[in-house]
Length: 257
Image 1 (cartoon, helix red, strand yellow):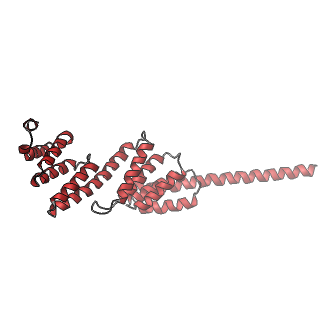
Image 2 (image 1 turned 180 degrees about the vertical axis):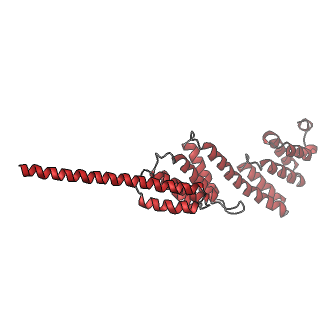
Image 3 (image 1 turned 180 degrees about the horizontal axis):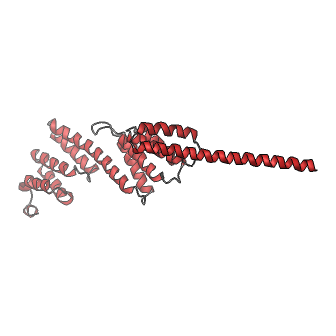
C-alpha cells in the first residue's frame, strides 16, 4: 500500500510539473505572439506594408489559435489595402469576419470588404461589375448594422460607387451627342434620369435633354422635362438656362415661375 501511494504521488508530481511546464510554454507563446504583432505594427506605422505582410504571415503560421489572431488578420487586411492589393485585403477581412464575429475589428472589417471590392473596380468607361457588387455590400451593411460607427463611412463610399455608375451612363448619352445622334442621346439621358435621379450629374442631364428636345422640335417634351427640372433640380444656373430654352413654348403662367 505504501508503494502504491508513493507511485501515485510520483505520478501526480510529474503531471503537475508537466502542467506547469505546459502553462509556462503557453504563456511564453502568448508573449512571443504579442511581440511579433507589436513589431509588425511598428512597421505599419512607418508605412512599410510589405514588411507588415511578411511578418504577420509568419505570425499567422506560428500563432494559430492565439488570442491575437483577429489583430493579425485585421492588419494583414489593412497592410494589403494600403499597398493597393485589394483582392488580398478582401480575403483577410473576410477571414476575420468569418472566424471572429466577436472581434472589436468586426464592423470595420465588414466595411473594408466593400471598400476592397470598390477599389478593385475599373474606370467608369469599362465594365462596372465590382462597383455594383460594392454597392450591394454597402447596402447590406447599412441594413444589417444601421447603428454601426462605420455607417457614415459606408454611405460615403456607397455614394462614390453610385456616382461612378452614373458617370458611365451619362457618358453613354454624351457619346450619342458627339456622334450627332440626338434622338438616341435623348433616350439615354431619360434612362439616366430614371436610374440616377439623385446623381450630381442629374441636373446636367436634364438640361442636355431639354436642349436636344428643343433642337428636335419636340417642344412639349422639353417643357414637361423643364417642369420636372423646376421641381427636382438644384443647379440654379442650369435651371435658368433651361427656362430660357423653353420660354417661348410655355404658357404665360408657367413663364412666371
